[in-house]
Amino acid sequence: MTFKSLASIAIFCAILAHHTTAKTTASQWNIVKSDELQWGYLNPLRGDKSPGAANIWGDRTRDSATGMLVRFKPDFSSPPHIHNISYRGVVIEGMIHNDDPKAKKMWMPAGSFWTQPAGESHVTAAKAAKNLIYLEIDSGPYLVKPSADEFNNGEAPINIHKSNIVWQSQNDPVFVNSREPETANLWGSTKRGELGGSLVKLPAGFKGKMLVDAKEFRVVVVKGQILYNNSEIRKPETLLTGSYFDSRGNFSHQITSPEETIFYVRTNGIYRITQG
Image (tube, rainbow, N blue to C red):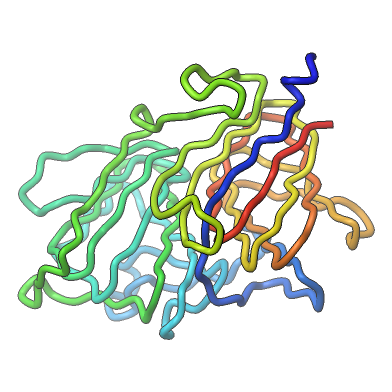
């Protein structure tokens, strides 16, 4: 492998988030394992007819930014409704449709991304045996309201099928190299101090570090699994799909990926991915 292929990948993204998780440390980092989450209902008023939901960070019932996992039963379909706030979604497992009530179904597989503006009437549906998404809000609480309360907040919805995600590597901004980590910007800014989100893809067999300089840095495992470590852990932790880690300030996350892995990253700072 050439020196060029070992070059760091510099990524500029952004974050605005409230910090609460299932496993808290007194230092500047945190991890949450997906198999340790506490589940409730996304819309408690509908009971078991509602999708399940589990906060990863933040609290969806309060006025704070929050990231959560949401799971849907097979053949789930919501009635038309609106939300009081806008949200973003990343499909982790299954097939998801989210659009205007009269729109033709566009099923988004794992790795797809969409946004839902506050006040816009829509339906959400799922058709696979298992359906799981990561849902993110910049403020709360997350509420579901009838379509009769529809309003226009000036935003336009986005639906990006997995096949339309544009991946780039640092060494070649046009044609990606599968041996290198790759990134795909999804929303927001890439400037230091400004909020933004992206996907990061690590090849199978990757071993390296994420070197971070950010006020807040949040990562969700969208595909695959990793062996996670840092200088404060006694032994590495296995983080499966749906798991999470974060940090504040200058920090180094050590990552080993036995299979191709995709992260969703939300940050307001700078991070570099180094191999070896």
